[in-house]
Amino acid sequence: MSTSEQDRRHRPSRNRHQPPVTPPRTKISKRVLLRVASVACGIQFGWALQLSLLTPYVQELGIPHAWASVIWLCGPLSGLFVQPLVGHSSDRCASKYGRRRPYIVAGAVAIAVAVMVIGHAADIGWACGDGEGKVIKPRAIVAFVFGFWILDVANNMTQGPCRALLADLTENDNRRTRVANGYFSLFMAIGNILGYATGSYNGWYKIFPFTKTVACNVECANLKSAFYIDVVFIAITTILSVTAAHEVPLASLNSQSHGQTSGTDEAFITEILGTFRYFPGSVWIILLVTALTWIGWFPFILFDTDWMGREIYGGEPNQGSLYSSGVSMGALGLMLNSVFLGITSVLMEKLCRKWGAGFVWGVSNIVMAVCFLAMMVTSFVAYHIGYIGHEQPPAGIVIAALLIFTILGIPLAITYSVPYALISIRIESLGLGQGLSLGVLNLAIVIPQVIVSVGSGPWDQLFGGGNSPALAVGAAAGFIGGIVAILAIPRTRIQKPIPLP
Image 1 (cartoon, rainbow, N blue to C red):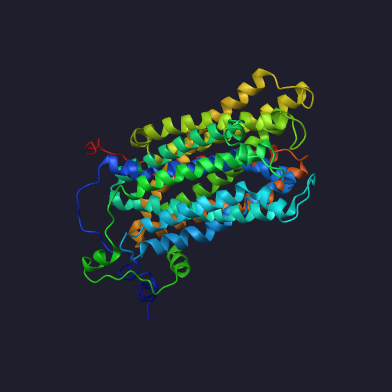
Image 2 (cartoon, one colour):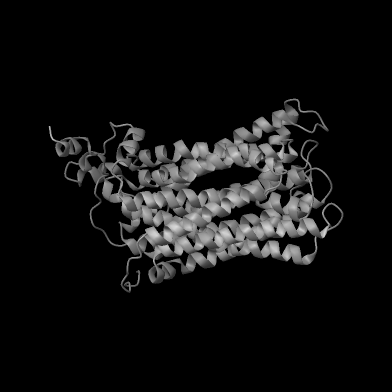
């Protein structure tokens, strides 16, 4: 048998792997795309609370700074397996309610359960035997980690099918796919703004006084109250999203697709690994830049408010008010970050149409790297001024830190949108469904997160326990990723589009 014949025999079959072809239909309106994407607002509201409050919270439970990043390891690990599996399953879901919507609803319910467990972790630990005044609360930590794991599984279960549904509705139209992902990014920004605003307010325990208990102090009660609000918010946005567009059940699609099968007899991991061999160079470049981008972002996501509390305000968890003041100021900075994220999301399509998606992505990564370097310089200046540990930081230092957080909203908007649009268009020709293709992209996101989660805490400890060493690695990765995107992702010319209906 010749080599070419062997290749043809082992190449993934379009007929076996490709999901059913949807018959041509009327283009979905912008209003429907907006409603479908609105679930991102509820999801990101909870993420914003996580990112602004949970790293400080785990340290208040007694987990040392060096190991705080390991707690976040469960998120990338769950994403490594859950999103490809959910994507594969949603491509082939035969529910009468559609392929994507059952997963979106199930994920939203799991999010609500998880945040309740996290919010009540200290109370659960107390009820199970954690004594008052203990520095380390092991039972509360177990409850927290369990809830956090479920939360990340649920987030992956919800976001992947929602993006896949948007790709289904845009029917591989390049511009409409970018627009839909821009809407998703816009709602992520709105969710961030609302979530960080909620996280920066310190008076929720007064509005919900029952949240403060013997085991749960003021900071814990504020977190618990914020998660109550999150449950209501995710319920509203999920209903808006799943009722927006009618999905044709898979059985109906199969009957209209001339006998194609969905390939459910093959394990999804085998399908992914077998398909990697046939990725064109452009897909590998996108995956490489995505990995480098997230090596850059993850140290910031892990330690943003902790950086503000420790290195700008000079505080320590459970030692005075400086640390909590810094965390609240960090949440304010992240809210400003989200404002710029939203503005950039609105302008995303115009930027990509004028300059090319790869060029825009590359420049945004370089901006990210410069901002991380600016954070390190700000930490250096703050340390040598001499106020650390004695008084509130000077206004100039706080303004500089807030400005850095704000500017980072621009590259974050690009990260939340452009890679998904690029991969949705390019990987579809391989015969993968949209759900599974986004799961493949997720591998390039979560594997770097696993590396950073395992290494950032010990790496920081080697240099005195601060956050600057991890930020330095992030800056280097972001800069390299930016150069690769500018040089290796083609800048295609796009004609002036016809307005969307």
